[in-house]
Image (cartoon, rainbow, N blue to C red; front, top):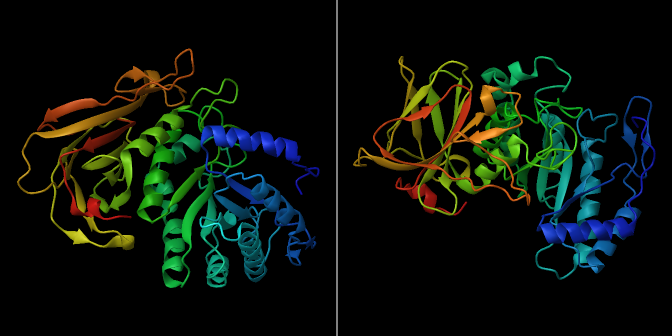
Length: 421
């Protein structure tokens, strides 16, 4: 398909890659070719069972070499209407069961076996429901792909990224998949297995520039809200949407956005609502590896500075199997956001702020500023320290136009944060 010739992964190359993964401490998900053994009909249907002979041999080799694999994923973009070709949900479920049987047989008495992952394609409600209902005993993770901004060649890509309605459209996918999982007897969890926002390699100076962090961090917040356990970004390096520059491998802005998310946002998600302009995107998590909570504010407005004034209520909810207090965001006429904090909290709240902006205010810049300072690696390639502004003040959090702010509030103690996710 697509004019590609047949490829081959020599075991010598796999040995080299595995050594690299071990040195990097990477969790490896390997995607298996799910089309082997099938015949493709004229209008795109792939017929017949998966021939797993080659995959089984490869998995056995990997096991015998003691290479660490976090999961084996079956196929790529073959669900629903597929991309180029498609496989029925019934057949895919049978093939997933075959993969699960192979993993069980090869890994035997190993306690922590690799995950069985599928289908790795675009969400189709009917297809996914049938597939999930038929893989309740064989599937560990259900993966889907997101490229909700359309093709990278779109000249209006930046407008889409800054449009709250476009960002909101992705919620239907997350919500729909969550509801299917909750209505099924499956124990599988949802992952975004691949997401680069704009397909066909993205767009230079957009998907590898500062402006893309608005989309990326909003996606991470939205995915977490709907109980997505893992979000795999396309890509680490490659195309125009890599986290690293394809020439010199220095971090693009989204690398730093991802790193701050990883360090600050814990696994417990606090239900957060905002009544007012949708130009403000807000997400709150229990802090990671520290006390308190972390608030993420994304300002899509190109002219208005938002003053986020904090308050807290005592409402308890139980969304998505997590205990949670409800944070209320109210948007006033004078552009002040109000979040309710615990009653009795001192007026002066200790907080750590991370303000992300584009160099020279240029959204197409590949240089990100943290609290006004350029983020760049040193001559040895070492990532700079990501230091916050330390604030003790009753004053609101100021969120500049077209900027992103992480705020860690270590003294805000929420009972939900004591619950294991």
